[in-house]
Length: 169
Image (cartoon, rainbow, N blue to C red; front, side, top):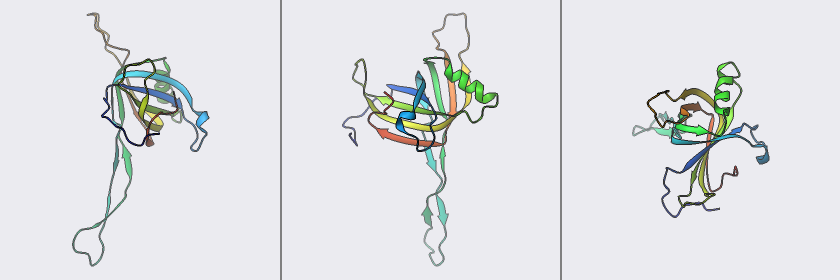
């Protein structure tokens, strides 16, 4: 499996998949695809570390920097369609009190060569995702070409990155 990419990849070819969460350390085969979707935009794949500054006695020039807490941004998927109604069902269950109903989400960047089954070049995996906002399109009789899901926001507890196939294909 390659550890580096030989060419720049366009960010416009990606897919989003949601899986039933598996216990930490669970087997790879435990992953069950719940739904996949195509979206025009995905933002929020972001991790920020808060550094901790420590003042050392006798050191008057600067501070020692240590690793602090890592925070993850809210992922926002815009203008998309899903393979079924499970994204709405997920939001609805959580909104009605099933707060422990978590999913794992994967955003995979696809190869830019046009072919029937494009290669997965890299994948970002978000563990224990929890939906925070679901917005459908505005209904308009003027004949718009909007798609079914305007926005889906979710937060998550762990972010990982993998170059090459995600194993979900």
